[in-house]
Structures are given as C-alpha cells and as structure tokens.
Length: 205
Image (cartoon, rainbow, N blue to C red; front, side, top):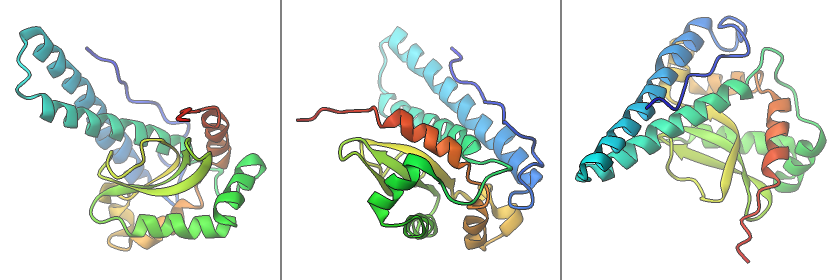
C-alpha cells in the first residue's frame, strides 16, 4: 500500500545557496524526507496487516509511528514550497494585514517566530499558523513532528530546526540558520496558503 510519495522540488539543489547549501538540501530532501515517506507507507502496511489479522496489540505504537512519519512528510513538503531562490523581503496583501493584526508588525512576528525556533528543546519546528477557531495567525513550536500544537491550527510557514536541516553548513550556530531562512521565504506561497485556510470554519458555536 503506497499512498505517499516524495515530492519534486521546484528548484535545483544548488538554487538556495548561499543561504542553504546544495549538500544539505540534497541530503535533506532525498534521504531524510524520503525516509518519512517510506515510514508512513510502511506503517500503513502494518496497520492493514493488523486489521486483517485482528491483532491490535501494537496499535498504540503504530498510531504514533504514523503520526510521526506523516507529520514529517507534511512539514517537509510544506518547507520546500515555503522556500524559493527568489524569496525574502516582506509579505504584502492580505497576509501582511493579518500579520499586523495578530502581531502589531512584521518585525514583531519575525522576532517571535525566530525566538520560537531558537527555543526548541531538542528537535522540532517553528511555525506561523492559522488558528481557524479565532480566525487569526499565531506562532507555535512543533516538538519532534507532531506534538505541542493546537488542534484548530493549520501551518502556513514552517522552519525546520532539526540538526539535519542546518548542521553541515552552520554547525552549532543555529541562529545563523534562522537568520538565513528569512532570505528564502516564499511569501507568495504563504499568502496562497492563507487564502485557502481562511475558508476553514470549525463552527464550534
């Protein structure tokens, strides 16, 4: 049962230099991301076998495995779209106004997301997300791949703080990676994601 596939990049491995080296991007995409895709598909196969046999003794582990690998696949797929050789600068349009409403200014949001990234304990991500319950943007930390996030939130912009995302180039100076990332952000992609998720309504009341 193969459901998930590794997406192709919209640019070459060298195209994000000097902010992200070709060596890191190739390893990150073709090895690390591919492993999450394989892990998700493998876990689906194991779940199918469990259903067929009626043996759900390993269900808790399999559910956690699926969440880990699937979230890794989703976040990485988004990361590749969130970056561009022509990225950087500041957003415009509705995204800019939503950022101002939620954070008072672009600089305030940037500082908060950067601080969230630097504050990750261990491996994880920082994310600019849409809270579909309040109808506003928030910043959140994603530990590992899938925990510590609100159930009503949908990520729009993600910053990978796992060491494999930056260590070969920036070593232990992860703050330099955070600074470099802002030069790559594809605000058009983030804007398009915002347009899509603003239609989400949980209708809790």
